[in-house]
Length: 262
Ligand SMILES: [Ca+2]
Ligand SMILES: [Ca+2]
Ligand SMILES: [Ca+2]
Image (tube, rainbow, N blue to C red; front, side, top):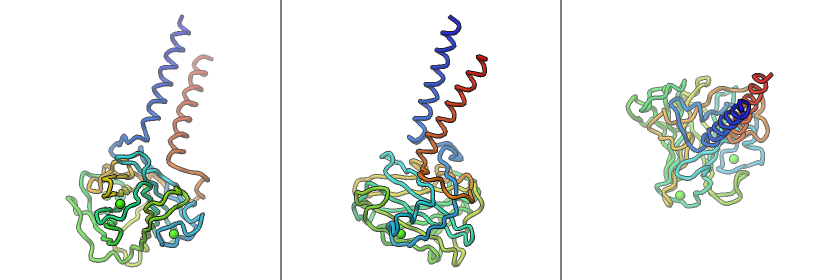
C-alpha cells in the first residue's frame, strides 16, 4: 500500500518534471533570461560577410540557437567572438521570410553585464537593419535609444538563399562588429544580455531570442551566461541543451529515489 503510494508520487513528480521541461522552449521568459542562455565560443572558422554560408563550416564553430515569436522555431542564429580581437560575429536566419519588404527588420541588441532593465541603459547597444538596406547603430540612454553618428565598424550583408539550416530559400543575415572605431562598446566578459529580433512585414511574423523579446526591454532578451575556450561540441544546439538538462534532472531524480529506498 505504502509502496504503491510512493510509486504514484514518484510518477507524478516525474510527469511534472517532463511537462515543465517540454514547456521551456515555448517561451516562458524570466527576468535575467537564464532560461534562454548560450555560451560564448571563440570562433576559429573564417567568416566572409556575404549573407550566406560561404563554406559549409563557416558557422559550425558556434552554438546554433532557435528563435521563436508568433511562430515557434522560425529563426535560428549563431554567435561567436574572436578572443584575440574581440570581434563579434552573428549569422541570423529568418527561416520563414522569403519576401523583400521595406518594413522588414533585423535587430541585434547587447546588454553589458546583463544588467537588464525595462528600458535600454547606457551600456546597451542595438544594431538595426531595416528594409534589408539600411543600418543604424544605437546606444541606450536609460529611457530609450540614441542613434550613433557612425555604424562604420559594423560589416553586414543579407541575402535570400538556402543554408545549412534550411534548404528552402529564406533571409540570411551575417553581421560582424569589427571594433575598428570602438563605437559599440561591447563586450564585457559574460554574463551579458543578447537580444536578436527579426520581422517579416509581408506576413506580420516576428521571431526573436529570447522568444518574444522586445528590443526596447533588455529584461526580455536572452543571455550569454558564460564563455568557453574549448571548441564547440558537435551538433550543439539550444534544443540539445534543453533535452540534456531535462534528462539530467530525471536521472538525478531516479538516482535520488534509489538512494532513498536503499
Ligand atoms: Ca558568409
Ligand atoms: Ca519579408
Ligand atoms: Ca546594461
